Length: 153
Picture (cartoon, rainbow, N blue to C red):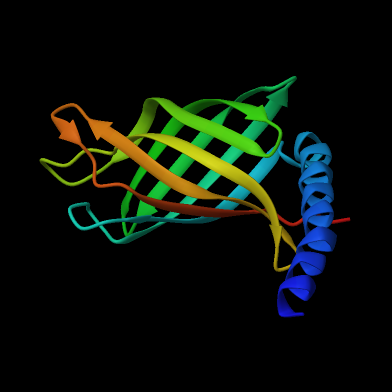
């Protein structure tokens, strides 16, 4: 009996998950352009454990271009970004650092960010891991969680 209930529940839940993914894939191109703000975390070995992070994105077909900004205390870095949208997968990559203030013998990581477009807690979000490099080594990886900036009327 329990097995029957479990299988019946899965039968009804799977189509709704697929429908939700389809809905998000339709919404992603409409919502992706604009400002996203949030945080970037980094495993041990970075300048900080948590950073303020924001991106301003523009979508042209499936191609993404934009800028990013990272901040930890008084240190900051600005980046040009490129990427691609495929369904609910948003792949972003830092192309170059355009401006920075950082302590001596430190560098901002050029990041690769395979993110997922989600609707959580009544907000559109970009969530996922990141990895990166500086000229002399790989960076300690981490996670990114960004929220779509509010639309004001």
